[in-house]
Image (cartoon, rainbow, N blue to C red; front, top):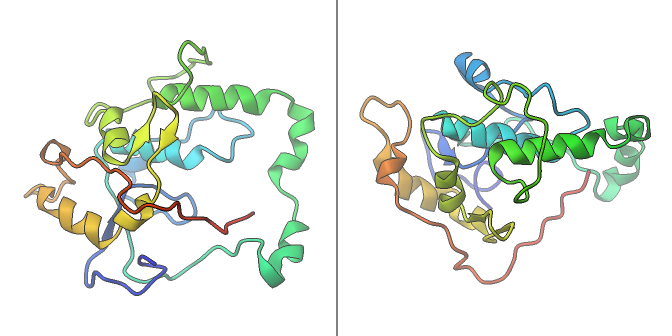
Length: 203
């Protein structure tokens, strides 16, 4: 595994990550000013993190993780499964808001460039909750193996994230330490690892 879940390969400094995680996020206050939560996305669970993460990337933010874990999320698996499955979640109310989540997802995907061609969505305050101007979203998609034209991804990105990504991208860190200069990064991730990794995660 990769740190912080596995034995750390990088010591004494945080490790670069491509994605933002809602469950454990710290930043200077200007992050939430530049990349506020979109108030027009009711009943959305899957998609929140790529929305914030991609928008943050386009505003010039980079993401890091710790050398070692200090907190974790227990999924509904094994001996914990029956207890966790009995906990109510927000989508138990979805019948009271029929169609709202679908409309919200169209907006979420449309704003970050992952919507279906020609599909319209709610545009209110799109500039406030939209893509930044420091880096193009396409740079993120190309770098991390996301194909928006076919709605597919390159598998096994997690095998690259960690020391390989850290070693390859760190030389592009600006001398003023204000993030990575992605103009100096021409890397495009493709799956060179063969088989597809399976995830055991389940809410």
